[in-house]
Amino acid sequence: MNRRIFLKTMGATGAIGMMPRLALGAGVSFQLHNKTGEKVLLESLNDPNYWKGVDVERPSGQLYDEFKLKKLDSGYLTFVSGHGNQNYTREQVVQTVLYNQHHLPAHMAGAKNMTYFSEGVDPHFGVPYTDMVFFGDMDFFYCEYYQRMYRYDLGDGRTICAFERGTQNFVKPERWKVYEQKRKETIDESDLRWPILNDVVPVTDVFGMYIIGPGKNYQTRVTLTAKLRFGSGTGLLAQWGSEMPYLIRSGTLNGFNASVSITSFLKDGKYKMR
Image 1 (cartoon, rainbow, N blue to C red):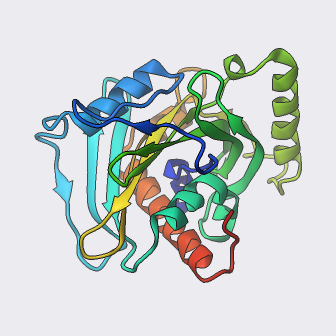
Image 2 (cartoon, rainbow, N blue to C red):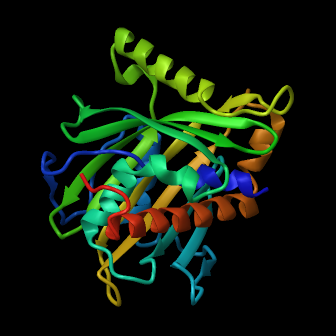
Image 3 (tube, rainbow, N blue to C red):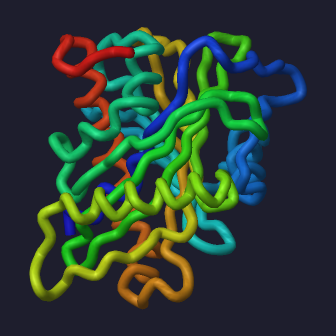
């Protein structure tokens, strides 16, 4: 069961100092290619009544101090927020989710192989991005998807790292061939079970955002809001798992804790800042 937890970690991308600062006022705004995901995330961020009526967990003694789960028309939107119980700079956390998710296999069961393969400035939005293949072990099958993450710096000391599932519409056909080759290499280089329980199932619906900004009791607070779901055609087992609140909660919290571990390694100089 614990190998399913990798699914809710999100991370990957960006470059520093190249993105426009977003105006506040009527509400924070950023863009995704996935307009449905963009709408959901912005509503969750800007609408004060969005989470009304949702059960809220507020544990003590954990790396996170708030967790929420909201049922959507299909699947769930998760929310986890915390500070990791020590002081981190905003940039240490940003660099964790933008550039250091390839360290996840060392900190999280089920995170099989995470491969960065491209970065630049998104021509549609004019902000930095990085592209990555996520490859995970779900015990009964493997799962994979392309992830693109963007960096948006707000004018109030916060950074939003928004992400979505990458598709061939993002790049030119010749570039997509390179991406597909990187995906194949990522899977081929992984030690897979043989000869059974080794199907590779694509994740069909992925979007989310990390909100990184000043904390109260500690220097920085990070909030992850995300949706991940297996759609039709991916198999009943995969679809069932992505509709189970218990599994979704476990994946979100274990992914959050793993990212805190990566940030601690960055802070201690065991991983490199860019």
